[in-house]
Amino acid sequence: MARAATTSDAFNAVAEPRRREILNYLALQARPVGDIALRLGLQQPSVSKHLRVLRDVGLVQVRRDGRQMLYRTNAQAIQPLHEWTKTFERFWQHQLSRVKERAEARSKSVDRV
Amino acid sequence: MARAATTSDAFNAVAEPRRREILNYLALQARPVGDIALRLGLQQPSVSKHLRVLRDVGLVQVRRDGRQMLYRTNAQAIQPLHEWTKTFERFWQHQLSRVKERAEARSKSVDRV
DNA sequence: AGATTACATTCCCATATGGGAATATGTCAA
DNA sequence: TTGACATATTCCCATATGGGAATGTAATCT
Image (cartoon, rainbow over all chains, first blue to last red; front, side, top):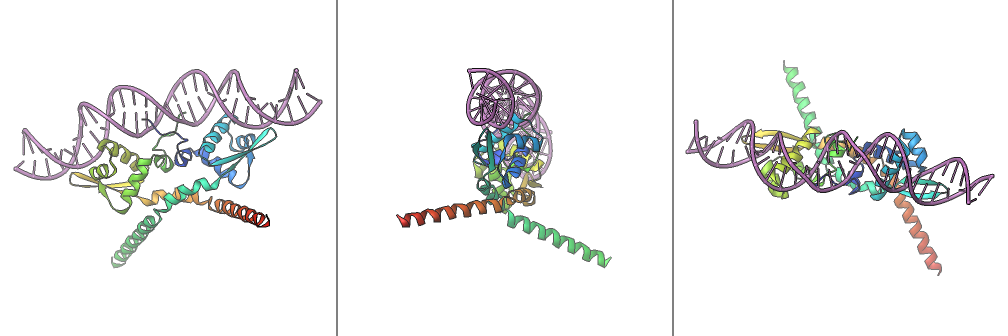
């Protein structure tokens, strides 16, 4: 097997930096494709393709408005990623406190010098 | 350009499900490669390759113990992902409350039936 | 040194990109 | 209907997989 498809899940979809930018931009308000392309400095076909991936995994939703297609971020689809990363929260807190302890131990030995 | 390398950042590295499993397993305690392979039902070379990717982006740390290499998750490298997903938290809360409101509106109209 | 154990790397290959360019599809206005 | 505008899709291609198999490398033991 090769690498999993970008459309296989939200983790693969958001691995691409431009798709994260798009999600950031569309979180506050729905926007048409051309506006996204202009704002993020991308070609229209490129934006359409990224939106297709995001849509396939439910990260964005669309509605038509005349000739335009208005896309907006579906934040709920990001929640699973948040949950997964959250399970590591207590570990990085532990690690930070250890770093702190070591720093304090070092400053004490410096005092003794 | 093609797809970005899995080693380009943590987002790309954790897109692969087995790598997430490895990170989960190594969060509590450092483990040798063979143990990981056995526990997760993977081939040893496969585990070594995944660990190489995780190490390149700083998601795991290693130390030698005789013939073994002990890997452990570096939770701090996951924090940026947590931060990014966190920026969407208020949006999915809004969306959920909207769903709630609509549900309540519906139940009221049902009452009226 | 020679054998064994534990990992890492390399080679091969089917598969999936993402960008550029060109083209197709869909909608509205005159 | 014809033309213009807004998106979507297709084609081509360089690149990067991840798994399997084989091989390389490092550390330990006798």
